[in-house]
Amino acid sequence: MNRIWTKLIAPSKPLMPSADIIAIIPASGKGARFGMPKVNASFRGRSFCDHIISCLSDAGINDYRVANYPEATDMLHSIQIAIKELCPPLPNAFLIYPVDHPLVLASTITKLYSAHRRYPSAIIKPLFKNRSGHPIIVPGDMDFDASVEGGLRALIRACGKMIVYVETDDMGILQNINSPKDLPATLSIVHALDPDS
View 1 (cartoon, rainbow, N blue to C red):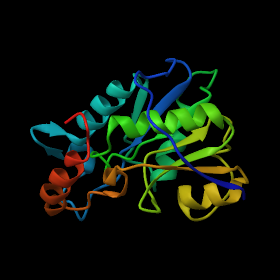
View 2: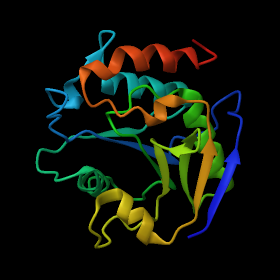
View 3: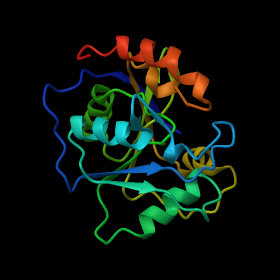
View 4: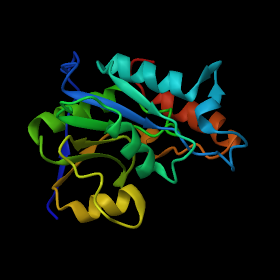
């Protein structure tokens, strides 16, 4: 599998045609460690989903689906159901943005999209201090129905597509909020990194 590491500066203005990319927010988990489904979780008076949707809007993405399906067995299954509900034609790319990563910066989304424009057939992943996280961009022609065991990570390993890693200063890409105690410390740190905050 080919891999590319790149450092991109976010464009001053979003460059995202509305039909070019759709964000999918996997949100079907029961949130056992959090104490409630994370689709219902909130901080600063807003739900995780509202924070994510606001981030998407700031980055120029207004087309999204909250993939909240009780029958879903894992994140990949949630994504599969959401994509099957879309009317053709499918977009050029999907931004997979898990609901438990509500601290990502809009500037990170624009960097990922810039990399997607340069490498439209690749999977785009963000890096913070050499660690990859979420959200990611995958091409619209990705075969989400491929038979694999191990969820989305296994599907990406098996698909044979090039992976492009985009360096960021956004620790939010690593912040999988598993319990309420994860929020206070991460919130102050992550937002301190946002030049617009």
